Image (cartoon, rainbow, N blue to C red; front, top):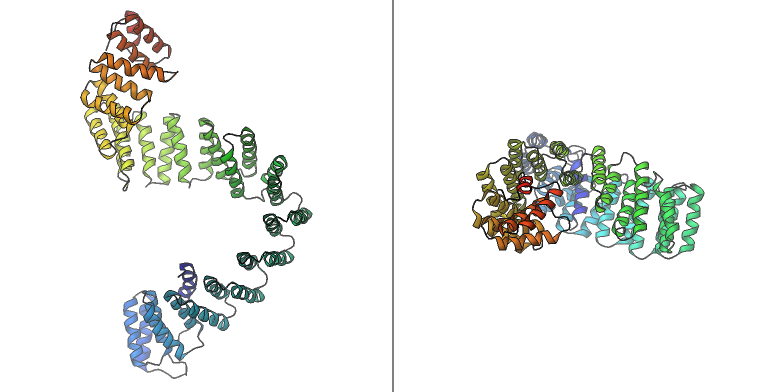
Length: 571
């Protein structure tokens, strides 16, 4: 059974239950009910009004026992059973109510919903038809009847229902579109176009309808008719954005890309074309512009136009940011995302993108400020706490960072990978704070949840190595990281440095040499490590050479200059 049909119809029914239906305690024939019945019936209504459904139901049952020929009581019993998912018993009661009074609109409406629940579409159809007969001014009933007919694939009958409604309320966009879709679904293209022409005749200045007609013609390959329709649109408004959007599609289909783009620019310059339509076009450019410089240039032109025409639309800035991010223009992308959240703070995904960029750019002050702001907007979003804790840790606010990370970790539900990230970051903060035991515990917790996390394996191993603590464990983790993700210079350097601390200088040399050879812009730290290993192997001249290269990068340890001056290794 179609849930949509039931929901639409039942919504109308529930809206009526609080009193719009005039229920009488007297029977249809005008018979005045007994005082006992009146007391039970009205007390039941009172209990129903204050939400005591079961007490109300019991009192209606009592009233039914007193007067078994009162239709209103059966309606109330049926309504209770229906609301409590007992459709068969509801059917029994509503049938009795209709037997006693077959002219009550509300009884037929409940009957229709009960039959829908039971899957009796034909019976529901008849009940809705009776509703529209009894209350011909109730527009919703026509739509409900049409929905039941559509579910039975009685398309022509549904169209007739829409026609009947149209006679009462006049030609409308909603009705016309419904009929057009039904005609198209049956392959009756001419009828659909004729229906669209009727709508256009009713609203001759509504250019959107002409655009839809032109779309029909283009999709059916009737380009001459499409061009004629464009002329009709141009006569109404030659600067219409909708017209130029259609023309752009028309030229694109003919392979005339330059004309298509010029028309697209005019469409983008028009506020008439909604922001979402423009975003959809830009998404197409996004998917093809990576390997097409011309398309990328044009995309940026359209993005500039979009910002100018829609300066208060967050989506225009976010889309611009996506293009810049794809090109690796991180600072410019960050600025666009900032502008986006300034105009619309409700989009969590944009906040996350902005915070990720701040972290990548290592702008810890901005990350701390923006992550804190995002948390006020999305207080139960765990990843935001990761960013705030990261920034606080980098800003040496260690206690704040741990408090933030623990709070965020407690928000995680059934996501071991994310929980592992929290523990890993807690380990980083504790390491920076010099709390090595707590740092190790956090890394162990992280790896217990995600044992193949190469970054935790690498960092944990390196921190152990520089402390010369538990070197066998460090070697095991560093080796595993390289096995899981071979060719990573930082992982190679870590393993080499662990081996160095173990006194395995020949092995260490091989691993750190890989790190040096893997990247043309080797870090000063790795170059210094390489020099240290060479020195231990008594290759002094080579060691000094690599120490000098490390110094030239502006990086390296505090002891690097002393090593160079004395040509001696220092811890």
